[in-house]
Image (cartoon, rainbow, N blue to C red; front, side, top):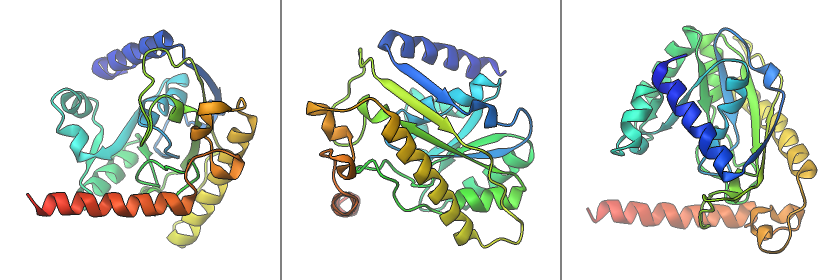
Length: 251
């Protein structure tokens, strides 16, 4: 394992232990021991990228994550992200990141992708972009579906951080590899991936400890929680996008 990446992993594991996080991992054996694969994850919290590398660590592997380029501009995180060879994504011009990811997959790397592209405020799956499937198809590697649940209770959009001692369970479920035929329709395969991951998400939610009181804000409305519905979340995202666009236009 690479020294920098190994050091960051060991530091992160120490932090997780100090926080009292209780990780429950299922299906780590579905991560291939060798060869490339796309790890497709849902996105409910800011630390999903850190937690999502755990199953690969279980089998002695590391994941190169695709992350928005702004993370790489950070004076602390930027050098670490570049040193660990993660892949910066410019959402206005993502072709370069895409080709870099495909090349890494062909070299036998694991590439972590969030098909939803951003955190889901409803804690349900948002619509998927097709990039994960397209990359896997072009590189001739499988897609590994992964579901993280509970990470929203540590830190997520629109809610305060609970970083010191959250002491919450975080479940990570890794599904069986999904092969993408070379001649398959990308949209159809993307829909298939989303269906598989939705079923995995519902199972993770159903088996998780009951949430009550203030913690209902971390539970989907479908399950009796107070999180926004998918429709309400979409409206919040629209307003947020308009605000960001206005701020950018104002210079």
